[in-house]
Image (cartoon, rainbow over the protein chains, first blue to last red):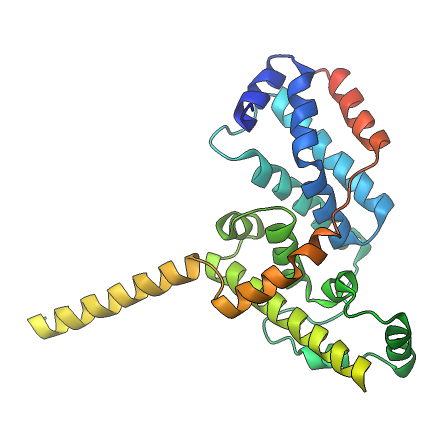
Length: 190
Length: 66
């Protein structure tokens, strides 16, 4: 199997097959990460497209830094495009950001009709909905780690925080998910 | 700085390095167990872009001129 660097060299030298294989290799990771952040299929398609257009433009212009890894580089481009979108839309997070986030503030937002719906659907947990309830920084790290397969160092570089902060956000994300799932179990039993 | 102070300082520095390595490592056991318990469910959330989008990207590449 050719390495990413080999595929890039192939592409830069004029063989489109290099790009085809790079897209095939990483399309799910990149698209899933974008989709879970923006929560809109059509918007995710646009951002995914714009991401790879930037990739193509940079590679063709000979401006790609060969010392870096391909996937974290593409993820950074996608991440910046998502941030740009939210800035344009001035979309505020559903819940407060930061490490002082209190999960029980979110749980308190569940009104009776939501709980009735959860009980009726007999779901143990709807993970996608719970992920969307996480503060954006925690959601972002979880998405990059699980779906993007990035190391905490790579995530820290992309999000411009320390490794400690990236790891801390992952811990908070997992702990908050666990609390939400446990709370849903309790509400289903009562 | 006497020898005792130097030893104490070295202990602090070494402890800080160990802590950094721990942090740079992975999540703790409890967190890892939970993470592994939801991995399969997380994997169900994976999505693929539309073929049309891929084709558009490849067309852009073929028609790209500096």
